[in-house]
Image 1 (spheres, helix red, strand yellow):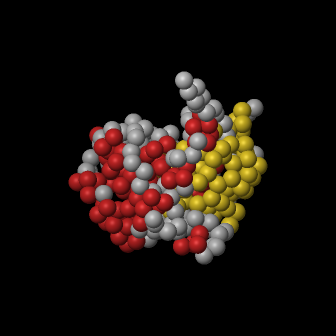
Image 2: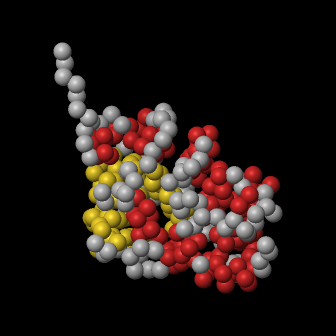
Image 3: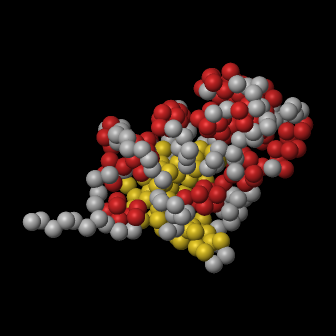
Length: 292
């Protein structure tokens, strides 16, 4: 299925919200605390966070999905949000990206309130979401999926070509598969495509909703290596996961979300040894067996 640039511009913008928002395993903890890596420089210098969520509330009818959630991501940080099913993790991502309107609270990006801005404006400002389930367009080729990622920048074709080459250098398998329909890619390759597509909007912060979902352990490892490299290259990252240990292994800070509330926050190295972690995640602490 071939599409012209003009068709992609029209179709991409008409489906902007669909694209940008529809758009485990026990591992060793190797986070900043255990590596002795310093906090991001902006946090040290006392600069405002690149993303700040203050007292955010979101409901679906009578059901409260988020109840006064406050989190932040500093420039250059990789932050994770973990929690069980129904905790409100995906709702948080949708609220940040702009497809869910909060009932209350404030979302600030790069020092500016974005709470009432439409999704496409948030994308232009530097927010990109890799959605749960990847959200690639299976009938389109890999190259066409990537071009949709640059839909807000199609007025500058030279810049798009340069950015696309840079992304393909980072994801060489996608260069090999450029002419193939995205639906023929493996799950891991589709996840790489979803990340690459988001990067073509040149985000200052990359949001990822359950990037390990449905992937084999080896592929999950590869995906997280990519995220860590992107973070080292200067992209701020906010990732939500069900797998506590997977998120802890990559993140510099973690929030534990349950029933729409932040139950715990801290550096993974500290949280993993905390007796409060199990209670925060599951809502109860394991009973100690009485000594005999």
